[in-house]
Length: 168
Length: 168
Image (cartoon, rainbow over all chains, first blue to last red):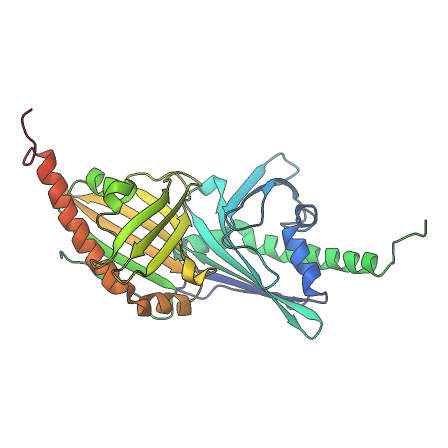
């Protein structure tokens, strides 16, 4: 995984993730916005993902679940704030197992010399909430998710360059 | 104004307000939840308030505006997260003049010896956003709003104790 950094500054209810992908910004944006793509990478490898609702526009909601092989289900939901653009996406995030504990997440995508620099900034209601999120194993999920996203972007790049297309 | 404290810890994208009211928690809760009451106290004294939408339930939206005497209008909106209860209310908050800059606000109401301790905790996407909010004159608005809320609670207490009721 290329230079993923997860930063949890002490005493500040904030979690910042940065990572670079060797892919155009539009492709990365699509991987966050299109449910069919999102479900292929978000979350840890041992989970599958189902999406009940995904409406990325100002005021639109989303709700999805990660499922493990033992039948457990972890459901998350939130609301988009402002219309998502290639520059960024703002949304709330709430685990249905701990309702009332909400984070406010800002995704920023920047083009840097043909690569895309991705930054996620999550602010929590308290440092305790941030730390509880870290202790839930979230870091593994983020790391594996970003690896899976990199693999997906590689696959999409090969497809768009004709690697898997066929003559009719 | 009784012991209002506004705290903006350096380097932390957070703003915390605490204040005590000599009123039962249910009355304070009503003043936050009922649009007719809210419009009587929220914001600075020199502004009037109109409420377009106020739907305090999980996923419900709100949108309101403060108007000054020069005809300027300042519109705010957000989404409730979780069903509001007397213990607390979670909502997002966004000024329509600066869309994309969102805060996540948690209101907590605690009974303390017949009085109500009110705490608001706002987390911002960045310290810069928090500081911009402070520099917008928000502190005056909060201080005057809390004074007006105290006056409203006093009026409601008098009414409920029969001070202004009339025999038919």
